[in-house]
Length: 153
Image (cartoon, rainbow, N blue to C red):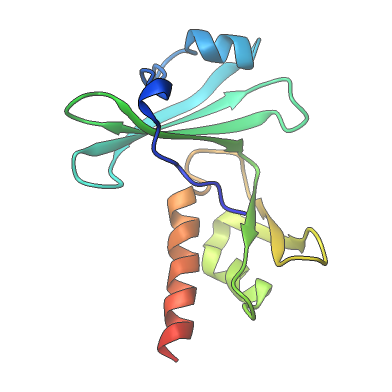
């Protein structure tokens, strides 16, 4: 399953987390965590930027990737996602070959394993836990490309 960045309701509005240190909320949620890597990139839409941070925690999967979409004009948080940084869970379209998807991911992805026989849910292991390893947007683009090519066939 791919995590989505849902719009935040007015009651959930909060400022984006700082790029160079943990927010007070993150200090509570990820006690003892440190920021290993951070950057900002333009998009996904005009007038927005994406703030990316990699946290090292004491969790079972210690590397956590944070993605926040921020409105450039208002500096308000538009959406936020937190995920394990060393693998992705993806739901492949019906009939899609997992090995084909893995190849489409490029050198960032090193293995794909079915998680459950009940659904087309797969774990994609990444080469490294870094901000450059992969992005949710790239995963979504690969899946949308596959769906559109199937519909066009």
